[in-house]
Image (tube, rainbow, N blue to C red; front, side, top):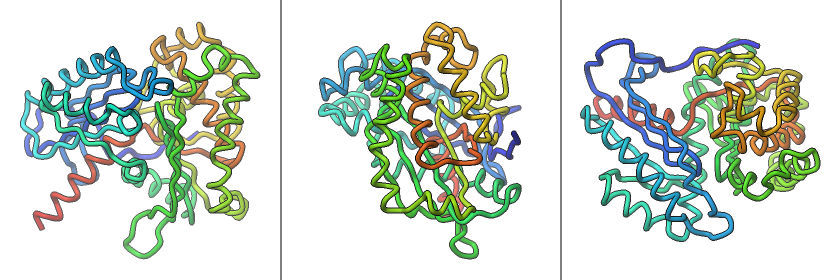
Length: 345
């Protein structure tokens, strides 16, 4: 296992100059990141994360339920209070799969605006993939320097209500960054699988059923892009950005508690990933709840995420997976900062 440089670091003193804020309201989590730009990325000034389970029951009802909306509103009030403590030059707040899919998603965000003042917009699945790529591009550049420049990359983001997969062309021309060739958004994530399979997902047959479900959904993407053939030819980097992949890295590193600095940029070999998967499956619900890299709030979601990861690895066997503890918030921040620099020039 090796590590790559990260484009941002925690704030170690009083911040002067402009700061930017990015808020991501997902199916399972509400996350806020406030940061100040640096020459090679940004410095984190403040952060907030809370499990809100906004998508609870969405799969059966098609709507956001009152209890879930109230939980999310409570977390968003906390975000608004943090943002009120310091002026920000730029703020972007987004909602993803739960609000995209729910019949009352836009109605809920109108309530959020009235009660918290936060202007949250629903983004498309493609923009989710674009933001994930934006945040992971520095890791891909570092991987190219350490492992050899590749021609392609497969990036996967296992979320609460959906999983985004992006097929990427690396360095298509001098001075150009990575470019999306194609994307797929599957309406399955850790929350949706956990609700569908329940306790059965902890059993061998149930786990394999989850893997088979995901495999069936990604076969068409393989048929269009012939990714397995590209893998056989070499030069394909794999990047995983999600709680599932970072948890696997924490297991491989045998961390006494989760550490972003240890995990972000780590490279998992195929064998290490398989051993970590087996260890997590062997723990059972109680063992997962007690594990320092999982905990009781995430225990029921880890194996569904592992099933999605296992399906991706089964169809597209990767010798290495680059682990990214970064995602939509980091992508939004980098994009806002870059656009501001362009305008100032």
